[in-house]
Image (cartoon, rainbow, N blue to C red):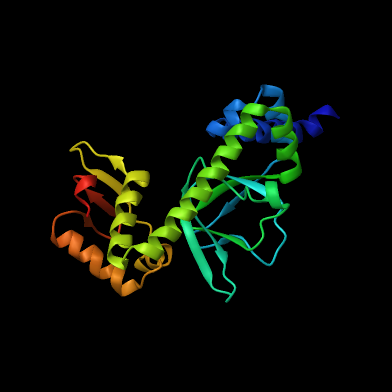
Length: 239
């Protein structure tokens, strides 16, 4: 009789081990004790999303915190006029949906997979209880929330006080700095997973402006790009 349950037991153990392994990949979760990680693994779910699939919908109640294990996600909100306003990108190892910790749910928030993604998500109440019992985790989450607010504020200041060419140029430099990696020849290379339309939305410019700025930077030798990668030999020269 016991053998009949063996596959189920093994699958359950394998899934729990996989969840614990996923949690270990997040710097935030390294602040948890093993018993706290086990508790979190029991309650969390894992989902995969293909490129361009929406993860968070503003018209639905989202009372979860999301951990991006793999891929890239763009985060934004729905404006009063009903338009999508994407504000920033997140790479693997990041969390999102943190507004639910203060507001109860992720009001008007949208999240879309820029690449194929693997995401872990947990109920916001579970996360709150962990934060209440672990001051280091609470401090780290509050720091993340503060940095997100600063990022949104910097974007707003850029839109208000900088011209479109400067916004696109600075976005390209910041993108390479965050998502790029050093190649053997010293260049900074990043996957070119954003369309000109994506960049236009993130910089509050037009697709035509993005195309013109990128081509100008390429002509000057500041960057080089094709359909797969974008790179620079010197981040400081992107201006």
